[in-house]
Length: 88
Image 1 (cartoon, rainbow, N blue to C red):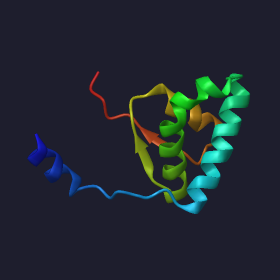
Image 2 (cartoon, one colour):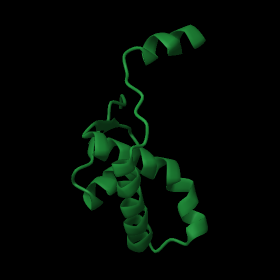
Image 3 (cartoon, rainbow, N blue to C red):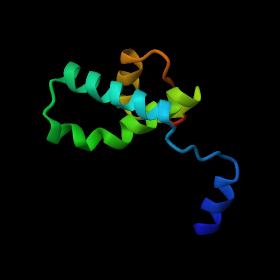
């Protein structure tokens, strides 16, 4: 499986979280917490997802996921492009 992962990674760019992405992350996190009425403890489980979304927005990239969270985030920030490649 490691060989397959290594081969697949060659087709994708790994993007570090930029300063702009970090700013967008803060905005998304604050807005998500406000809209959902979440306590900070409950918000922690969404941190990585919010970072992924912020990074996609900053890089003007499309985030590929079947997670409905990203569709909800897209309604909060229309600059987030998402696609669902899952087989139904």
